[in-house]
Amino acid sequence: MSKARPKRLGFGIAIALVCALVLAGCSVGPDYKRPSSGPLPAEWKAGSPWKVGQPRDAEIKQSFWEVFNDPVLTGLELEATTNSPDLRAAFERVEQSRAIARISRADLFPGLSFDPNGNRTRYSPSRTAQPNSLVLGYTGNDFVLPLDLSYEVDLWGRVRRSFRAAREQAQASAAAYQTVLLSLQADVAQTYFMIRSIDLDRYVVAKTIELRKKNLSLVESLHHGGADSQLDVDQAETELASAQADFVGLDLSRAQLENALGTLCGQTASSFSLADTERIYQPPTIPVGLPADLLERRPDVAQAERTMAAANEGIGVAKAAYFPSIQLTGTAGTESVNLQDLFTWENRIWSIGPNITLPLFEGGRIRAGVQSARAAYLEAVAQYRSQVLVAFHEVEDGLIGLRLLGDQFEAQMRAVDFAKKAADQSRLRYKEGLASYIEVVIADRTELDTEVTAYQLNGQRMVTTVLLIKALGGGWKADNPMMTNGIAPLEKTR
Image: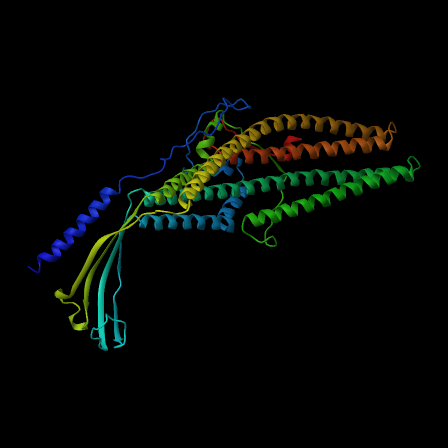
């Protein structure tokens, strides 16, 4: 007979748990449906086709910098990805959000705890008791070995929606990590190409300094021979000093950008250096139809969408507060005043039953909570649509910027060719006595300005290319047959 009782007890607990699981099948609050992102364009201004995308931010991104075919840039990108403290902090935020989701998931299951306790108590003979009853003072023991079971019956979906909200937030955090990673990689590439643009400017100004030194020697020799005035000598000195000042200013700008690049790579500014180069970079060709993948690749859009989904679950959590909360509790164990009898079957104890909490008057607290949750969801929707608009804006900027900067660069390079010819002619005319030195000065300044502007424009093209790649969520496939890339020595472009 004693063996049948624990079976009946265990069977009763099992039946109670099964009933709880069956009851926990409904939930209040709206089911999530992704809202529209607002009015969408039929095509890009730049003429590229467009299509509606589905987020695919979880796909492995390519190393977009490889399209530039620069081993130095590749090394810097890998160094930044490995050493950046900001990226490490973003990664740990992902780990935190995933742990929070696991904490919420634990509420889906019953909780079981073991809480043994024992005490020896002295009771006073003068303690409160029923009138005319005999009260004696005595000392007694009490030893208990209980197993406590608790489980919230999720009738209204509060626990499930809380877990789904935490899970969506974890996915949003993972997308935020991808955003930080992509921003870091793009910042490294932008800073790198800005430095390379300054390297070309320094190369041009250095050549100009050497040329103006020769001009000064020529003017001084003509002045000593009586064929030129002191004014021309002073003008030549001025032009030389101006070019030298420009070179120092470029050195300052390069040093500051180099320090910034070192910080991005996780190094101290004092220990980081980047050798200069005289190479000019040609932006890769954008494949036709590439912008169609915009919403499928951008992690910031995916982050906004997952945040919106989490906020939607919050509405259900808030609405569940209107309904009763049912907590199943159970205890099983043994209790005895003698420690040696604690494990005796006759000293067993158990209890099982529900605790029901029903809100009757909350002073508008629950209604305000639902309104707050609904407003948070609508805020997330607005932020999602705003992020989509930002995405379109950034891609349009990149596409139109690359096209117009390319046209401007080509026109500027034609201006460089004509300015060089004009400068050569003015120097020849000056040597033959057919022109004043001021004509040489003007032509020389024009040549320098047009050439520096041309290389600055090319630097803007490279930076714009990086920004477009970032706007597209990390670039495109490197094996695309429509994509080309070239790096040419500076002298071949002159």
